[in-house]
Structure formats: structure tokens, C-alpha cells
Length: 454
Image (cartoon, rainbow, N blue to C red; front, side):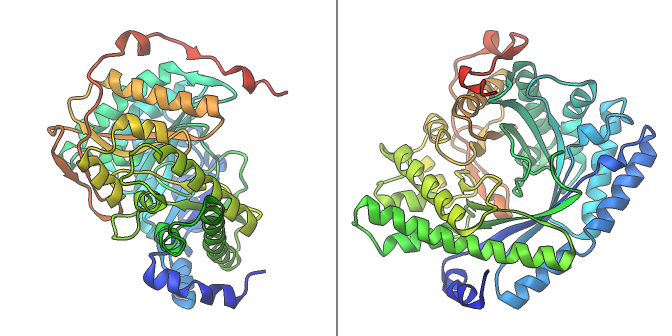
């Protein structure tokens, strides 16, 4: 049981250390909206979302006021739309109309984002999957709140290299179609290996087919809280360090569970999971990089960074699991560049490179996240970076992701402003050597030997 004493204990964290509930995300199954008639399908999708989520924003605001806990975003995730629209959509343009329907529904209920314009193609693509993927650039250019994700690989199935190659092109096309906004469309597009079905964070949230009719998932974040706690044990040994992180993560997770249970009760929708992710923001003191530097690094990216991040991620997960029986999603530490002032400073100082970030993704919660690269980067190079990250996830049996932003018209040394929680980012250099012959091979990379567990 969660009591008011625990809530009161968090007041200082909220007021002084940037603790917040980053999102309440309602997952909604749209499988019953499938229809061979496109207009009928669109009508069912709109009606169900607006009916199920009509009180989501109001409920989040009420909980925030009553408990004094900032709830930054209210979001929706839906069944991957490649499944929902497969019977009705015969062209990429048909799928774009479904994206516009999602956007209209999101506007109607007032949520910040709606995720699930997605396809799951880790082993192969259906005709509908490919149509949706090819529609992504137009869909993200024509909508404001729609987020898109594509799962390209898994430990069990291997990596679909045909889809990896296609996604390199799709990322570039999305950048081109949104170049008037510094290629912002790419900030709403992520590719995964081992994508979880219950992730509440955007851009990768979708409502998995194994989930209930509707579900409430909460994402809670507190890099500033962890940093403050570590400042109190500066110079202590690793045992003290780890215990401090774990106890702090426990407290943060309890706040998330309280919000999730309250939202679930008030909306009459089952509680799913709490995602405890140290997700930074551009705000001062809300940085994962600063946590790593408090642990003992001169700058994130220095030797020891991967080890420090591995320890942080593990202790966060252990603290979360102690606090709630239903920890899920992507729980751990995020390392986005544009959303973390400490990461930006490290890039500008020359301490942090794309290659070091890739190494760090072996032990973080997600992967290469919100990284701006030159707009003239070849699409095959983007596919190669995606393939590398998919391989890390496949072999290590973890979720990995890529959210790259090739900023059309800008190059290394320039800065791109995204605004809000997306922050700003320096354009990072990319290895200039090519991989065309590799990514242009067709087929898939088979699953690793340790995937055979039946």
C-alpha cells in the first residue's frame, strides 16, 4: 500500500530536484476497428479513441493538483496501425489518412502525443507493413501529434535487413519533408530491436497485441533527484553509491505507482506498468550526464563512462523492482543528446562522439536517441547505423533503438533548435566511410544461437 507519508517524503524531490511524472499513457486496442472500408475504419478509430480517452487529460490534471505531483504529459498509444489498417489501406496515401485520423482524435481529447503509427517487421514485412512504412514521411509531415515506430529485429527472430535498408531511406525522406522545421519529423520516428509492448514513452509507444482492451501505463523520471542523492555521498565506496541509487529509485517509483493507481481507479481502466526511466530534459539539473559526472567522470564520454552507466542502469532497475511488482516499459537510464544539457556540453567539448554513444547503448535503456547528424548523410549510412544498433539489441537480449535526425541544410558544428522537451542539439559528425554493399544485401541476419530456448 502507498500512504501519504511516502507522498510527503517526495515534496522536496518535486520542489527542488525536478522529480516529475513524465507521462500518463493510455493504451487502447483498436483491433475491433478493423474494416475493409477505409472511411468506416477511420470512423471507428476516431470514435473509440475519443470515447476511451475523453477524461484522460482532466484526470491527470486533477491528480496533479491534489497530490502536488507534476504530470508533464498525457498520451495515448494504440495498436500498431499496420494491423488496424491492413484490410482497408491499399496505398501509402490511404495510411496517411489514418494518421490524420489519429491526429484529429489526439487534438480532440487534448493529449500531447499519440503513438502507434507502427509496424512490427522483425522477421518480414506484409504488404500492409510496407505500405505503412512508406507512408511515414508524409504522415509525420501532415500531422502534429502522431508518433511512429518500426520494430526491425529481435533476439528471437534476428534482424530484417530489407526493412533496415528501407528505414534509412524513410528517415531521409521524413527529414526532407519536414526540412522547413529543421527536419523535426524525425524526432517523432524511432526504430527498435526488441520493442516492448507496454512502453509509455514517445516516440516508441504502441499498444501491443498481447495487452488488454485498455491500460494505464505511467512513466516517471527523476535524474535531478538521483544527482542530488549522490552529492550527499560524494567520495564514498561503490556499495554506498549503489545503495543510494537503489533507494532513490525506489522512492521515485512509488510516486509513479501512486499516480498510476489513482489514474486507473478514476478512469476505470486497469493499471499496467510503471516505467522508471531517468529521462532527462533541457532543464538545469535534470541531466543523466551530470549523474555520471557526479559518479566521478570529468565529462560524460571519458573512459569509465560505459561502466558508470551500466551500474546506474542496473541500480535504477533494482530499486524500481523493489518498489512495484509491475515495473515495465524501458525502465533505466535514457541518453538522448538534444534533451540533456550535460550531453550537449560533452559533445561540444569533444568528449562525446557517436561511436562512444553507441558503446553506451550496450548498457543503457534504449539506444541512439535524439542525435542530430548532417543533412547530407547518405541513407545507406543511416541504415548501417541502424543495423549496428539492432545487432546490439539482438545479441544482448535488450531493447535498443535509433532516433537520428539528419537536419537538411545543416552540417557539423551547427546547432538545431527543436524546442520544448526536445531541446536543441549540435550536429554530430558521422563516419564518412560507406556501407552500401553491406546494407544492400537482401534478406535477414539470423537470430543468435542463444535465442533457441524452447
